Picture 1 (cartoon, rainbow, N blue to C red):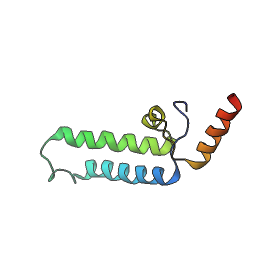
Picture 2: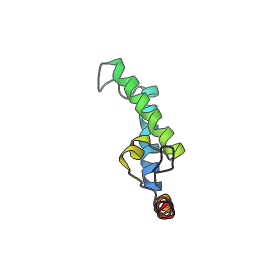
Picture 3: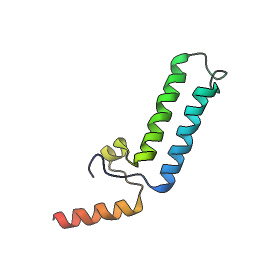
Picture 4: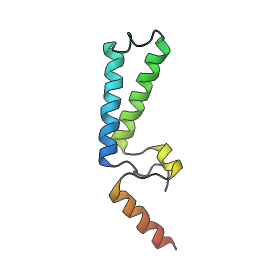
Length: 87
């Protein structure tokens, strides 16, 4: 599996988009202020939310590529067919 190849399936994409949107909204609406008193954690939540939204948008996760994980069924079949042709 190559880095940059689509490796996120539909359910994974939806979960990433939902959690990412909640983290970004939580930063802007101040939902995390009662949970912790450290500003750095607010910005960490914002950064994680943006990363999750971007991976959901592009359907590519670099960590999944490094670990060889592919949650997309159609792309998994294409990758298996590609490996078969290389031999």
